[in-house]
Amino acid sequence: MAVTRMSKSSIGDFQKDNRMGFGFYGPPFPTEYVVVAGGGGGGGASGNNTRAGGGGAGGYRSNVAGEPSGGGALAESALTLAPGTYTVTVGAGGAGGPNRNTGGSLGSNSVFNLVTSTGGGGGGTYDDAATAGGSGGGAGTYQSSGNGGQGSVLQGFAGGDSDQNLANNNTAGGGGGGAGSIGEDGSTDGAGFGGDGGDGVTSSITGSAVGRAGGGGASGGQAAGVGTDGGGDGVLQTGAGTAGSTNTGGGGGGAGQQTFNNPTSGGAGGSGVVIFKIVKSASLSFSAGVTQSTVTTLTHKIVTVTATSTTSETVTIS
Image (cartoon, rainbow, N blue to C red; front, side, top):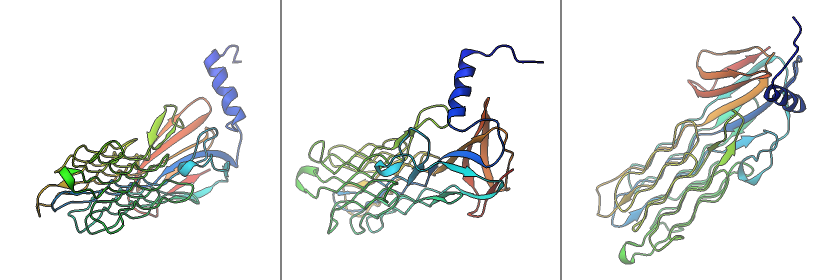
């Protein structure tokens, strides 16, 4: 039976997707992606007036037309995939630091085909400097440097610096870096205010605008830093940092402590995610260790991979 009528919205979607190369044709298949690594853990605390830095967001890479990639980059180059088997890995978030001696752990890398996003850097502590990553971890107080970790080029930004001011609980850690901006330095919003996490990046690849890969907030003596776009919050004075949100690559929040010993842990980084959009006519099958959901529209399939059990999992396209 011939098609005699289409709704205006269906026609608009069809025309848009044809312009993007998502028509009804065979291989090689035009493919858009968002690949976010696991976020770094927030720093731990255990000492007088110690304020830990927030974890850095996982690296963010995207080739979605008209949207930014991480680290201030434009969308990456268009990708076409021939029939074959391709690696897919979702990076776990890094553990939060358990005390003032140990900073947050690095997040794990996420991979789609040849696209690798780097895990986020860990938040700094009293004795352990913030680390570099997809986005860098924020600095903790009493470090010799007090400088945030560096972000990866074209994936994310650096973490914020800490403020070592000991007067009246005015110490403040630096916020973790985000895919969209640098983590805020401690005391930027006022003396003793923990730095907020750097902004993430928003994508509409799934059909809804979602922000991902934000930095974790830092601890502060006067106010806690806030995580953004999946990043966990820091803590006011004493307590554990908040974990980054699952499948956002957000950094964990930094811990704080008022009294000697009594260790408190930083928040864990959020796990990453791999999202790709491919022409509807492509057939997809996944190895056993892949957890994913697929939404099929008029012209394409949108696949969200939320977990992989090993680093050897795959998707086969035919």
